Length: 124
Image 1 (cartoon, rainbow, N blue to C red):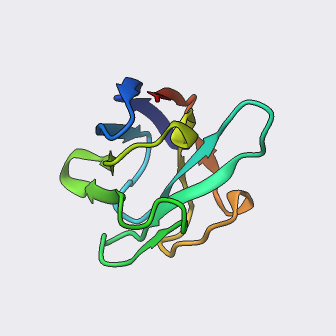
Image 2: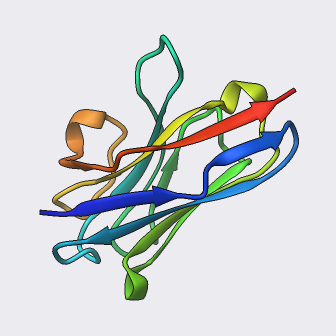
């Protein structure tokens, strides 16, 4: 089992920045690929970014490419999402997720463990 706890969400003005953190516990974290997803009211959960077990391979949704950066610190069992140039359409609950293997995918069904989510609100 893997437990995931997100933090770092909040209210920010358009153009601002936030850094989300996801602390993992419960089993070996360094072998798991990790991902960030988000869900806005009335919409389906969508892929944001993912990182492989070593941190050398990443994937991004087109909507965040160039603005968001995913990274990980295996020594501290934490994955981060640095979000810059935030837009009102980035407003959503952001979820951290873990795979049971080390390779990245975009599909939510590929992730076995999920955090409770953290709210990000971007005002115009």
